Length: 496
Image (cartoon, rainbow, N blue to C red; front, side, top):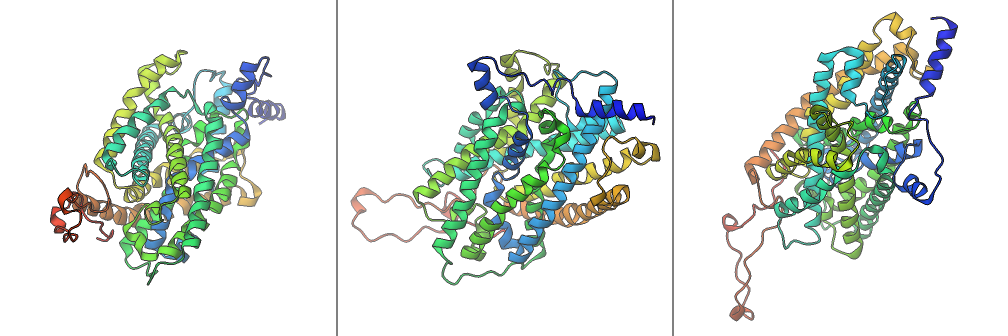
């Protein structure tokens, strides 16, 4: 490549036309919009990544620790945190490569949001696009389902007058309002608030557990069974696999090439929340967590807990939007509405996307076990295996490596180091994440279906006795009815 070509290339990479036009606000309305609504800086991307990464999994990580044991739980968080940061870095490199090639061809992205399947299509062809689209959409679909399930699971600990299925109906309608949020540009204030909410919740779990102390005769027997061990490991794989929306977040940045290290910094902050909270709750309650996938269920009710529940509910609404917005984009492109300038028309067109999410959350309300299943079967390919393979195939020729827009850092060993790391990621996740993790999580998931059934009305709710008749108010308390007569199945340890 000639020196002049390299200069031109550098200019193109550093100057995306429509992303660089940060016009200074001229009036109060535009200033207000820029401050709260229209974000695109590296800080916005960091808030988005941090907020999206640690959503409801914050409440299920103590459950994973009870399956893994303390030491394995800590090590898996550190290990998968690094691995997730690497594949997010790989995705960012592929985005910049694709974007630069299209910019050279004078393609205009002013009214178009680039997505991961389009990056695969542009770099590797339609077969890669189809595989990437299938995995990415399915993962984001179930990621939205999980947020909806989490809403119903959490609100139940404040108000149990309604069962969890009814709460799912209600929150499904509430989350449908995310159709009015145009793109990731418009999550500036929500990302910031979302991170504050998870920070409060994480430290509430930590402090409340330490103040509560260990329950009587507490046991920390994990790991006891392979099926539990790998189920817990895949939940952590899912925790640090939140970068399925990396491309959309990058496209919302004014300077996407600055994204490379943002996910790593986000992961470091997230670890300061997940490690202390999971370890403290597991220390306090031990094996009781095997039967309580939501950490809120074991902590005594207090104003602080109620605040944490409410904040997590709001945050899950935000995370639902994060997971669902890329699906909205895909649907808009499929029906030809993506470049429509009318927000109301686009919102109306997006509504059909919410319906299957609502339905699946009612069918599979298994808060906790569903995370591991999604992690092993979908996250493993969507954000680990496919990006690593795509990077290797995109730059498999010497010419492609020489002309790459972003060269691998010397700290990673340049191209040789990058290929070694990618091969390790593919083999590890394929065997441990998809193989053993898939076996364990699917086994556990089937066990939940056998125990509670599909469309269960109130998953893991405590048995409720019928109210005593008024004339018997002063009479001795009756014996509880047999378990078979309970409206809801009794809690059950998640064992095969």
